[in-house]
Image (cartoon, rainbow, N blue to C red):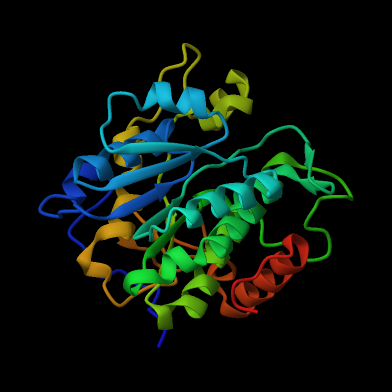
Length: 318
């Protein structure tokens, strides 16, 4: 039976920090993998999990930069991984599996946002390829480690940006005209649908999956945006200060929902849902907080899984 897409009364909220979520939770002996876990909300996710006792593996496109950023956090191991390159994904996964370790928590955190049109691999649109297809291939290739020892939780970072676009089934690679925000929206919808289908396929093996909207946070993710654009959105003022600090979170706050979905006993036996503010989100068809129905639709999730398997040639469940 699927988990209802309704709030459960977690007791947490918009202002919750990652350390608060982990209060009383001991992750000693657990292994967590956090893609992009060396900047923005990723490094705060890594910091919180390591502080709770987990061994954290951080696959990074820039491993030297990652080691420097993470030098003061104990219990962290850095690997090399470029999510836009399937050969790199395969190499990292093979190396990890060769270590014989299992994974208790996987947080698919790395992302690009609203970048200029870029093609990777066999001509794939870079946001769909990096944010979704790379994580799809990584998770499938790490499946033996996820399913070992009774299972794991897999958390995929989506965004409220999913509201900008459903999957463009007729042209997911934007070959007929590129629009950076629609491409970002499609990628974030894909992250959510991935969690829905992974949970459906994996729950009998103890692997449960969640999608997460971390909240509005100004991090290096915005590196492709001009200041004028962010001023126009009302994110910052002309001096670069937050224009609406009540709406934005700190990176520590942004990490909280990822950590909650990855560790909370409140979610035991549940999965396949979209979460925000350390809570299961409500369905929403307007501008209110919540998740659009198309981003958690089981039929669309299965269709996207089939498409992703065809594109990447990877499917742990075939």
